[in-house]
Image (cartoon, rainbow, N blue to C red):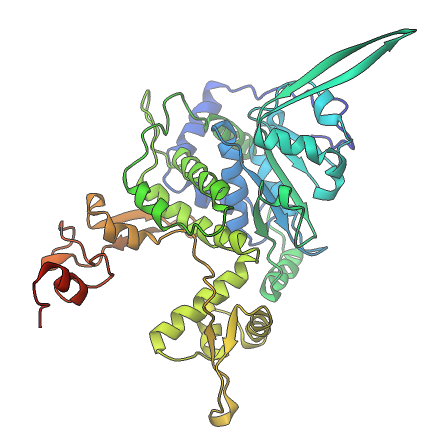
Length: 455
């Protein structure tokens, strides 16, 4: 697949020829319940080291190309961080005829290009290289249509004509800038390249003993499989009732959630397409297992995007808040490093950087051996979606437990609801009243009903 500096001509790449044997192998691949974990594994011979979450996000965005809402992803990171490695590797798993790679775009290139853009994946190497065409790109992302009127001159005769381009493409791009123009920022889900010392170490080691390259036959099977991951008319038209509870928990003080919530639902639909549940002539809908997988991959990213900070910082803040609640005091860098599975020096740097941004704070006072204690600030960082356990606890119709495949390990995971009234898992009694207190222990409820709280 070639690269072009402009899109004055389209990539005339023939679609894959799918033989019966290729279809059979592809269907076997799609029938597995750990397809997403398989994506993280095949990304390695395609040149990706680590970055499992980013690989899955980009892959799901590409899978969602046939859904009503096309997803756009921008990867931010410093120069030499390898931010372009992930999308360049992931698009190799898709039919080349679906992918448009661009190093740059002229001002009207998108309007004059030929062919519809619906169901296509547009990979633009650097966000700034398309700055002249950003207005038209925004229109495609939001409206799915460009109509441009221009003048045609023939001798002394002048007339006007129009050209039109339709379709919502999946847009993948990268940037070294921490902030991009606001109109662009809200049209993308932002993910951050892993710039940690641990990631650098793994990249250096991979240069010594690189993995074998992916063979052509296996790559072709993956391309056929991803071409079969398409939505059908009627899919996802009957959303489950428990999603109403999830929507009620999403923070609403930032207007950006009006775009992020539909994005998350689209990601859930993409997870469902990858679940291996597709049966002949059967329609797909989002299940709670799909939500658990999507939450595992996406909650830190959406929370970070909402706050405008990298997801690694969100992970740090959440770890500090969780440890402080467990210990009922501030926490040390050693405790934070142990929780995150990192080493003291790099974690200490992250803690100090988070203090400067007022994401966490130093507990005032003098302690033995000058030990420093930290705690989370009151700023609500890391909250976008309710946890699956919380949803289970408040939606009895889901039952008492759920099992799903962890997309990062390929292993089965189980979540059980907290015991509901009477100690019976899966009972109909709520575990908390509207004030967040166990039934029978709430004085406010007792005051409103005339009953005394249980002693």
